[in-house]
Length: 320
Length: 320
Image (cartoon, rainbow over all chains, first blue to last red; front, side, top):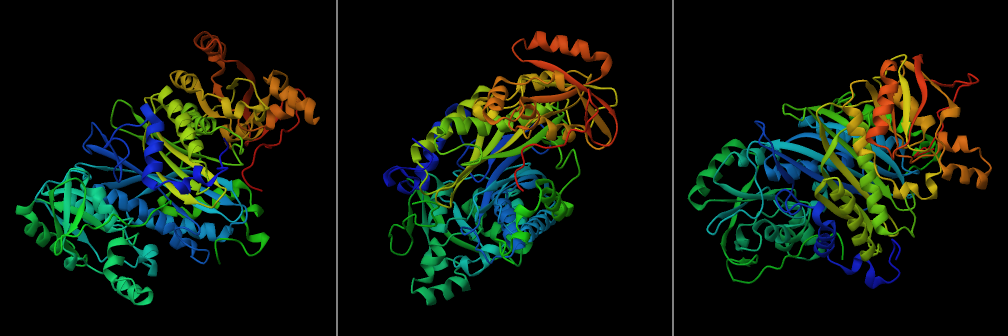
């Protein structure tokens, strides 16, 4: 058995992303702690003995031809790498501290472009006080480029997935869908918003949207609740509307299924929902906030409020 | 300007690895702290307020066709990834705590091979109490596979490069050269030895050998000392001898220039050198230890003791 599959049925393409990760976690065995210290959340979470009670960590990559194309300026790709990672910290309500940066680059990668990439990453990091403390450059296959950032953060309290309760209201920041029109390269992680939410005890769970609402919402609620979405309340972006006109797919579907929104999706105790919404908007007048549904008893499914139809967990998939 | 160079002169192949890293660090600008909190050592180093006074971090990858070939069992490649990272911690004398694991894999990568990779990584991590707390799987170009591990560790005292003094004696563990005959996949990081050395105040500086002694020794001493090597004292491995017979290059050259030894190279105060050597051998009777030279005043060059010839910093290069 070699690294590359001799038959299609044995290749990663034959498996879902969830199944690939499940197999890796199972194989890692004793080396892999259970959630929230291990895999399953936006960050891994550790308890400290210091003022900053929690340390969190997360890792994410950008890959040429996958997360940006050949014509993308280096600085934008570098900024995207940092902001993707910051978005995971935002979902936990943590503050960034330090990160390691690893490149795997073909020998034909443009050296000025790579420098520009580092400029973009450095500016995005410096903007939020993140220190890039080390890294690595390895030679990869010609024509390929990837960069991986492993980030550490800290917080006094922490937000996680799977901790919402029946009756909680569901909120989302920003406008959804159509990020492919450019927002996937231009977004800023909702770091300040996440830290603010983390300070509110009425906020019960949080994640960031990377694979699309229809896929990330089940990931937020876990297997012991259902979610009921008010599709009329979904904040549909202008880009999703424009994309709908171009490809004929409803804008609502783009808002539900498009990846790379990098918005925060969170739940709030029902008695505090109006207060949280009002004080959030006062703190962040430029960040749209929408109440889009509520948590019910169930087993990890999402339904539409108006017609009771099940909303399939379709969204961006890395494999399959 | 796109990601892939339109002319060879603009490609990474036209630059040395040192120059590529220098440009990245410069471009990262304010986001990049100076050594030892930033790049330049085996790990980045942070001061804590707790018992474990220091936190350290490091990142390293393994790449198909670069660090292992198509026929390499997954478990061996996974073990190598973990041991490479542990070797950086060993050089700092730190203990491993947690790590993040990121895969970039073509859709044609064999799913059983990937599971086997995770088995090997998990076993190597569990052996030393390292927890793999999170990660990421992304789709890359068909036919390619890479895995990156970002590791965190801690220590009460820490070993670094650049801190040796004139007169110090130079030691190296193990036998050098010819790792290509299999040791590059089979080695175990000298974690216990590194932690032991870290407890000895007479040990003044330490690094691990990854690119070859002739290249890593200048990296240990920095620009304010020279090193004088007793070439007759170099511990030449049987593999280096066998490789010399096969390719006609002197075994000594293999011991000096071959990469991936993953041994510890360190300096000791001259008055304590014999004592350290004796107590080390008592603590680690199975780990070869050789005194191979001494530190002199200078500017970062390495000379041979017997004939005063300069030893060029030739070794494994990731680019160029």
